[in-house]
Every structure is written in C-alpha cells, then in structure tokens.
Image 1 (cartoon, rainbow, N blue to C red):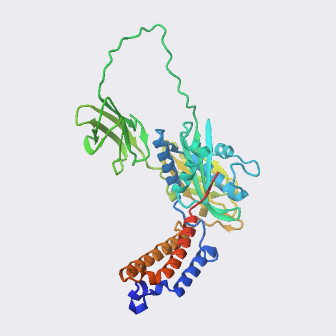
Image 2 (image 1 turned 45 degrees about the vertical axis):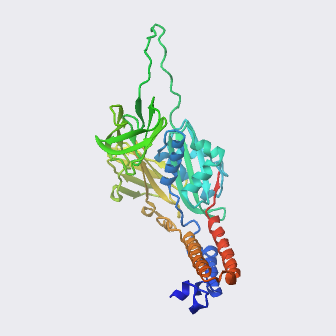
Image 3 (image 1 turned 30 degrees about the vertical axis):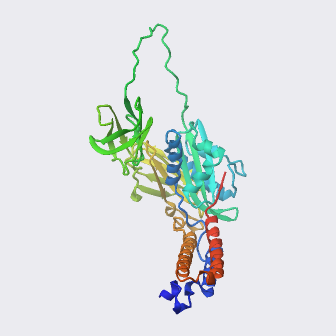
Length: 448
C-alpha cells in the first residue's frame, strides 16, 4: 500500500498515485464531473451553502457592527422575494425590473406588505452565504440597503434554476418598513420652570441590547452594553435568572458578552454587574424563536374546477399566512377556526410554498407542491439535494493531490533527491495550481 502514496525503492521513488496514468485518470474524472455534470445528473446549482437563515443572520451581523437595530424576518417579504425569484426564472431576466414591466414593489404589494420604505438586493452564481453578503457590502448601493436605518423587516428567497442558459443559485433579498421612522420629540412647556440639577461623575453600567420588555427571536444573541465614568480595565459579571453565566474583562465605553450558548426560550431576566460592586443594570425580556406550528395534517387541499382551496389550521395567534405559486402570492383570509387560501391555477413544474410567520417574525416555509395535480401530471415536490457534488469532488482532488505532493517533497528532501526530481515536482505543482484556481473560480458570482 505504501507504494501508492510514498516514494520508495519499491516504486522507483515515484508513487503510483502520481504517475502519468493516474494524472490522466484524475483529469478525465474532473472533466466528466465539471463539463458533463448535467449528463451525469450533477447540477451546477445543486450544491450551495447558501440559505435564507444564513443570509439574514449575516446581514444583521453587518448592521450590528455599525450599531444598527437588527432586521426582523417577515413572512410577507419572504413571499415577495420568492415570487420575484420565480418570476425571474420564468421570464428569464437578470434585473430589478422585468421585461413585462415587473417591479420589486409589485411583488411586495402583492404579498400584502404595505410599505413606507422598501428595497431589494439580488445575487446569483455564488457558492456561500458569506460570499453573497461580502459582495453586497463591497458595493455602495447594496451596502446602503443593508445598513439603511429606514428598514425594520427583511425577507429572503434562495432558489436554484436555469437563468439565461446558466444553471445558478439565485438570491433575492427584500427590505421594508411599514411605518415612518421619524419619532417626534416631546413638545416643550412654555410655562415650565427650568430646574437646577446638580452635576457630577457617577459610575454606571447599562444593558443596551436587549432592551426592557422586548422580544428577541435569536436565542444566540450577544448581550451588549455600555459604561460611563469608568477608566481603564473593568469587569462585567453577567447573571441570568440570578445565576452567574459569565464574566468579561474589557475597557472602553462599550462592552459585549457572548455566552457561547443559547438563552432560554420564554421569559428571561439578565443583570450586568460592574466590577463585582453594587453598580448594576437589569433587563427583563422574552426569547421567542419558535415559528408557527403547522403540521401536514393541519393542511387540507380541496380541488375545484380549475382551482384549489387550501384550509390551514394553526393555534398560532394571528399569524401572517400566504401561499406562493410561481411568481404569484395568494394571501390567506381567516374564517371561523381556519385560514383559507384560494388558488386560481398551478401549472406543471411550478413550486407551491406555504409561508407563515408569527408577530415576532419567526417564519415557517413548507413546500406543498405534491398536494396539487396538473393537466400534464403531478408536480414533483422538492428540489435537488443540498449536497454539492461538484465542489466536493474538486475540493477533494485539490486536498488529495496537495498531500501527495507534500509527501514527495518531504521524502525527496530527507533523502537528498530533491534536485533529481525538481522538474517533475514543478510540473505536478503547476497542474495542482491550475486545479486550485479552477476550483476557487467556482465560488464567484454576480450581484445586482
């Protein structure tokens, strides 16, 4: 077995796995996987580490870096983003505005989201959520959307398909706000007498996030705060339900505590104590990260003459529910003890997704495509697996060849045979470098 991997007398100091026959085999395998992937049943867009939740989380992380409030996931904006993505695939365009006059705003309005402010970011061809958000942050217009103080809600759709003859992952990110962001100041009282207040320096600590009485739907959030009139290093003891859960040492006016675990679901009370003294602050808040609970048996699809009615039963209090069929969004209405959605038609190949969110922005998405039949036959449920076969094969070869080269270099160096084999090592290294560049090139994409 050693003859396959390590240079030695038995293989004339040339491992079997790095001989010309092996390299030709590797090349043919890579050509088959990357060029004939469709024939082999391997989709270019089959695999990606991009997900809706990751895009939202990374977007909010960028906002938090600049002291902005996080955006809440909104089911209606999710529906609008999904409808826009479906429309782009259907009408085959890569633009904010479609060939038939489609605008981002029409999809947002159709979802039932009544906005005061709204915006949209698009991306395609990326392999990771980090790559998408990094590209948006590097673009002034997309960065402006992500860091805008005008927005409070966010919706994202991640969809695979063929766009302009290219099989890609498409990401649609929509922002919105249903209210004005202007907060009027309290009117002054002309009859009031200015009170003289004694001034001085008092050490203080304050928890700035979460705020008192708020609801947080990310149980892994970082506790944030500030101190005043404190110089040099100081410590913050953090208590949850009156039990110590951590301590941090820092300096400066702002502090941040990462618990490295989730805060408990439900009601919470957190205290921050400065330098183990009686200087502290306390907040009570709620963690709610549970989306509406809708089981398969709670969904009933009733077929009519060329149309369908969907009945949905849930114990969630006043959820937002809609069904997205292709690029069309059908909002739900409430009738007695159930929600009803009427659908005009479902064409063959169209994906049907039920989207529901609660008042805190927790969102559930259920694909119910297999509940519908079309004239051309049953619509297949689901999309391709999230396993990235192509990228996995390419990455595996990059690592595998690198390890074999490393073994060769070490053995030749120890035996004083480096000069004798340097020409062959150079050729192998160049071949490996081309393989590496080709693999990394597959992680790029476009934004709009």
